[in-house]
Every structure is written in C-alpha cells, then in structure tokens.
Length: 395
Image 1: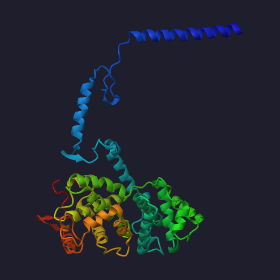
Image 2: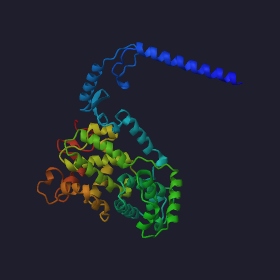
Image 3: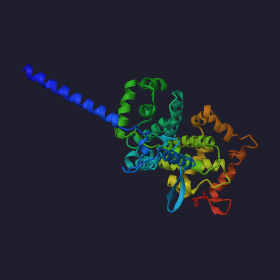
Image 4: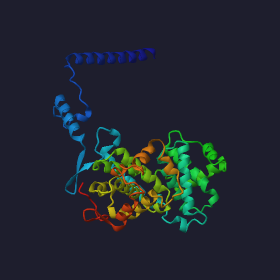
C-alpha cells in the first residue's frame, strides 16, 4: 500500500512540474502586453482591431455631445431627453423611462389606490376636516423627528388606503397616523424613530402594544404593498422636465413645487387624483405663479407627464385655493415649515408681499390675486389663445 501511494505522489509532482515548465516556456515566447482597453469600449466583432487613441477620441466626442443633453425622436420630432445626463450615473438615464412606465402602472393599480369618496361611503365618524388636521399634525411630527418628506407622502398614502376599507372611530385616528408613519419610516429612513418615540409624541395616549397592533393591521390591509409611487416621486422628474425649457432659478421652481405638493396632502379632494396628475398640476401652477404672463404648459411637459393642460384644470384650481388659504386656512404646519431653514427661500423670495419688485419674479398673492383668478376663470390668456386648451407654448 505504501509503495502505491508513493507512486501516485510522484506522478502528481511530475505532472505539476511539467505544467510549470510549459508555462515558463510560453511566457518567454509571449510578446509584450498591449495597453489594456476598457471592456465596454471593445467592439463585439472578435476580428476587429481596436485603437486606443481612437477610443479616447470617440469618448471625448461623445462626452461633448451628450453634455448638452440627449435628443430623442418622438413622432418625427426631436425633443430633449431630460433623463439623458450621462455625467450623473445615478440618474440611470438608459432605463429611466422604463422605470417611470412601471411607476405609472403601479399608481393606476386599483389595489394600490384609495377610494376617491371613502369618507362618504366607508367612514361614519371621520370627516375631511379631521383628516386634514391629522395630516397637518403629522407634518409637525416629521419636522420634530427630522423625517424626510418621502416618508410623509407614504404615510398619507397608507392612511387613505387603510380608511378606504376599514371603519375607524375618531379616537383612533391619531393612532392610525403614528402607526402609518412608523411603517413609512421603516421603509424610507436610515435611522427611523422607534415605537417609543411615536408613543411619546402622542403624550403617551397610546401604548406601545396599541401602536404595534395598529401597525400590523395596516400592513394586513395594505397586503404588505408599501412601495407606492407618491407625488414627490413623480414631481422630481417633472421638475427636471420643467427646468429644461424654462429660464428660471432651479431652486425657486423646486422649492415652490415642493411647497404646493405638500399643501395638496392636506385636502381630501386631492385624494381622487393620481399622484402623477397632482405632480403635473403642481408644476403647472408653479410655472404660472413665477411667470404669470407666459403660458405655463409646454409640449415637453405634456410628453413627460402624459397630461394636457385641460386634464389638470380641476386639480390646479384646488391647489391654487390651498395656496391662497381659501382651503385649509387653519392648517399652518406646512406654511410654517417652509418659513424655516431652506424653505425660508420660498417665502422670502416668492412670497414677499411688501416688496415693490417682487412681482417681476413672482405674483404677490394679495396684490395680484384678482388677476390670477380672472385668468383661471375666463380660460383665456394674453395672445388670443385658449388657456386650458393650449397643450404647448412652442417649446
């Protein structure tokens, strides 16, 4: 037995030695390595020779061309692709349109939508005003715990979906709110508040066990489908589309849009609209308030939002009433929020009622309120074209 094992070991050693010798011999005959080229720059044809200098020249040409934005052909017309920004790889420009198509399919899914009239048909002890007060308070909770706005939008979505299929008395409405925010925080936040934090914010009106129990009830009602697209999700892309063909400060457009979007959360009448329609209405009203003498809609916005100006009319008027405090005037949390920190920019620059030159960048609410309402009600615009029926301003 020993002699057999020794022979096997000798065979293995001999074979290994032969392999090493062959490798050394081939290495001596092998020419020097060429400069490596990135795999993505190699052509698919194996018999094609690649020049490194040509590759670098091609990259330079590509970068200079795409830095100005990518043009896409749609219905025989070239339009700028707001997602075609290759300098930012996180924008996922190559498949951004597929992502938003998927998000649109999600938002129209009846299983992920609240009933448009759930307070009238389902609830017996909850009114639209109570819902508004709850959302207004949740805005303060989000500020207290430094919760991102995406969490707030998801929270309101969970509340509306739960109330669409579950009768709730008013004494448990606040419990529903904190439990919904607990779920949304776990989904969105890096360091979400814990259960004790949400009990504390209610002055310990509810116990930890009650919050956890309500959390489970919400998840069962939602069938654990908690990743809905929200107004904020779609507003980000629509804002980019608005900035492509609109000569204005990006910060002004962005902050005013976020402000109007959060105001829309307060009103029960906005529940019946898809998040994409509300986001598009926010862009429409934002552009109108900043440039009242220019038509706020364009062919680019119609392409990326999927809505014509006529589709937005009713929702725009609701958000405009919120903006003027004709609706939800007693709900001040969102307005106070945007007076603070970065949101102060919105109030100081866009809502400067006493500034004599403020009207050049935005319409002051008190002084030009009648002018706005006249334009909205009469449906016409300077230049003798119909306001709401106009889908494009030539951009």
